[in-house]
Amino acid sequence: MIKSKYRTIKTSIPNKKSLSLINDLKKFEARGMHGQVPILWNKAKDFQVFDYSGNKWIDFSSTILVANVGHSNKKVISEIKKLLKKPLLHTYSYVSKERYEYLKKLIKFTPAYLQKAFLLSSGSEATEAALKIMRYYGKYFKKRRNIILSFEGNWHGRSLGAEMMGGKKNLKNWITSHDKNIIHMPFPYPWNKDVKKDSAKFFKKNIKKIFKRKKIIPKKDISGVILETFQGWGSIFYPQNFINELKSFCKKNNILISFDEIQSGFGRTGKLFGYMHYKIKPDLICCGKGAGSGFPLSFVLGKKKIMDLPAEGEMSSTHSANPMACAVGKATINEIEEKKLIYKSKKYGKLLHNKLEEIKKQYPKLVKYVYGKGLVASIIFNESKKKKIANKICDECFARGLIVIKTGREALKIAPPLTISKEALEEGISVIGEAIKKYYN
Image (cartoon, rainbow, N blue to C red; front, side, top):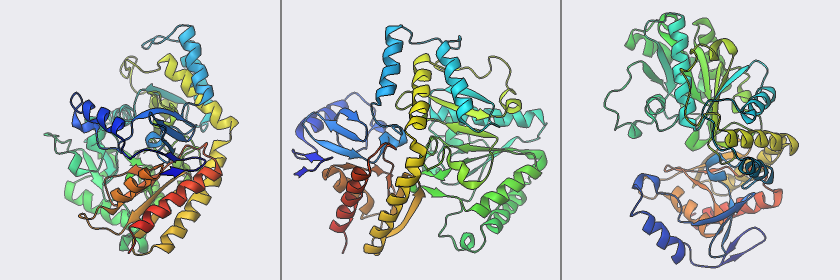
């Protein structure tokens, strides 16, 4: 049993009520939706989650990097109520005041060179749209093969184009006809000896291998490259020299650079967008998750001349620019600005990573790496596939009143709402330390 200022566990975990409903749900819902820790959510406020039995957790997941401005943010709820009273729930692609105000705010809020946006509903839609725009670009410049480069291990969503750009082979077994002009490059993992030695050389060496094998002339054949700002499961960023080399290569060969900022955007890494750590200006940026604070809102941002390549009507979507989602999006930006959440993410991020490094030093046989920036981090464990230590530690944290992100791999991931208090952040980190200690021998 747990009782602290921010955590309460007063029943067995999972408790009978939660488990009963979760098991009943499995009768009606496809199993692909299941696999998370067995909690029956009743409500969520700021950085805490509550069930129906009086249990209370600190949330280090932000419901998978969505609740950047906190769960059930008051300003967000206020905007929802306004639309309900109006009433206005949907407008398709007809113009609404909410759509205009959000887009105006979004463009003002983001870097000046990003002049236009295309609004959508999910991260997968955003990366699919980026794929389409990159190929419109290739078509405009009469690229022969219209190739898109992406990276092994990156993740861009679950729809067909997004999954094909993604670099996880085990999740693409269902695809019967792969796009031969989506080509994956090796990811520069920091523990790779060649990457450690010279990450720029690592890029050049591997890109030359691909060109030779696939008979590619980059200037004539490649339209774009898409990068997940950090490799999701491990919060692993690219080396700076690797990005510098990529940037030079793309500029030389008239290739668009797209960053998938769906997890890293809106202050999560201690900067507005994660790509800003790399001193680069991408041509396209894909955002979702934290942009909508729980509402289905995503978008692609870019320069006017690129964003306007598709003709009128060629990029519309049923729920694009939904007025309620737009109102929520605007409230989200206002909260990030007013509460200085980007600065807070940077400040508390230093605290988080310093504490995690202390845990790493304390348990060196079990904790292999700590990665991330700002308020996103991963702990990568020394483990065999049989032991599944990471999953056990995630479950142990859950039993102690802390929700962390299961990655399905040898890592657990941490991403609390940017509104979390210092006291709650430190308490959550201490729980992780306690959970690791239990399995340390």
